[in-house]
Image 1 (tube, rainbow, N blue to C red):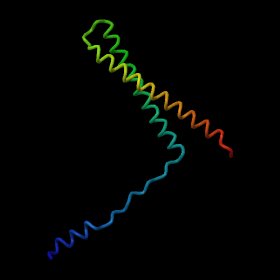
Image 2: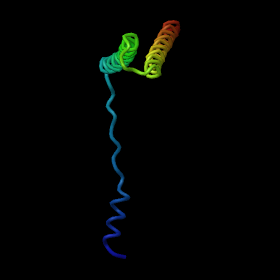
Image 3: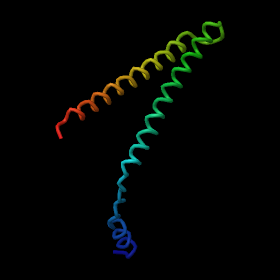
Length: 102
């Protein structure tokens, strides 16, 4: 057996060290959640603004297709409804936690 295959086998069988996950402090977790929430709300706002822009263009008689306006409006509607439902679930979870006996 050639030596190259033995060294290749040992290097392939070497165990790699798993990366250690660092624990976030509560402040860091709060900031991370806050950033994620702000990004999500901004995306919903952008979808609403795109829908408004397309609707105004359609009303003014500019060159836009009706189906594209309707698709944009529906996307904005779905994004807003999803955001409201997520907010409802978060409020519900918060109320559950508050009701827990200590």
